[in-house]
Amino acid sequence: MRASCEGNPSKKEAGDELGPGGGDWKQLRGKVREKWGELTDDELDEIAGRRDQLVGKLQERFGYERDQAEREVDEFARAW
Image (cartoon, rainbow, N blue to C red):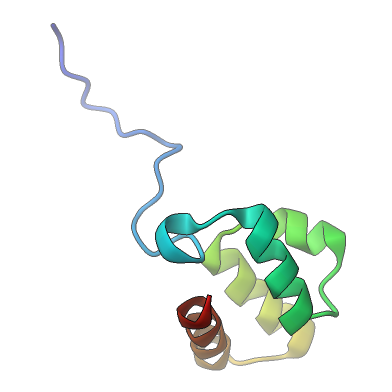
């Protein structure tokens, strides 16, 4: 048997996904919509449960500084 040296590109690092263990994006999406209602369906599709994408969208859409967006996402994730 041969071991592969290549990483799994679909494997995400810990902390990359929202919610405990990544959570269920369909459920979490509704909560994200409740909290940040101005995000569009297309933006939510782009985010797809990825923390870094949500942080970026909050910066882009609401003009948050990166650390403010990260704090809000972290607080949201803890509550979820």
